Image 1 (cartoon, rainbow, N blue to C red):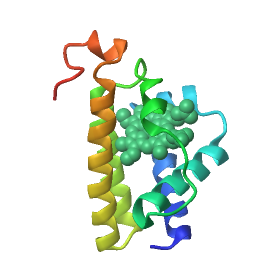
Image 2 (image 1 turned 60 degrees about the vertical axis):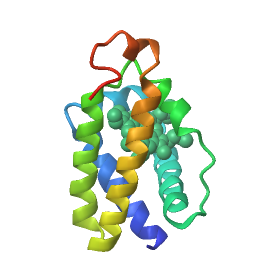
Image 3 (image 1 turned 90 degrees about the vertical axis):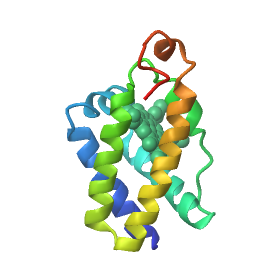
Image 4 (image 1 turned 30 degrees about the horizontal axis):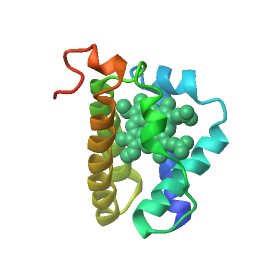
Amino acid sequence: MRHPDIARLVETFYGRARADALLGPVFDAVVADWPHHFAALTGFWAAQLRGRGSYHGQPIAVHRAQAHRITPAMFDRWLMLWDHTTAQVMSPPDAEALQARARRIAAVLRGAMADTPAWSACPMGGGT
Ligand code: HEM
């Protein structure tokens, strides 16, 4: 999978996430520097897929810090958009690999939100 393909995927996906009624307000509230965010995400996915790339961030800490804005339903919506976008802009085997990888990461991120104060207070927080 070539780097420009990943950059295009990331820009298409986050364009849609920003326009989404559920996810958009979270990104609007948090992300000020979109070029920086695109570069971080492109590096993240390149590192995921090839075991190299230029990502040195801490996605768990980053999402935990936003736990008061993020809900379990947002993860379902995020994955639905990701499935849709990867299927449109990547080849079928690449799309499948990206979808499977995102599901595993989403489960880890979601699990890591469960004991934050915002999610502990919510009966749905740690569950489904
Ligand atoms: C509930 C769904 C999600 C929401 C609302 C969400 C929201 C956000 C926001 C607002 C940021 C920027 C945080 C900041 O700059 O301080 C961010 C960063 C990021 N997100 Fe998500 N996210 C979600 C799910 C995911 C998933 C499933 C993945 C991976 C499969 C992911 C990967 C990342 C990465 C890699 C970063 C960059 C962290 C960094 O700056 O190093 N996110 N997310």
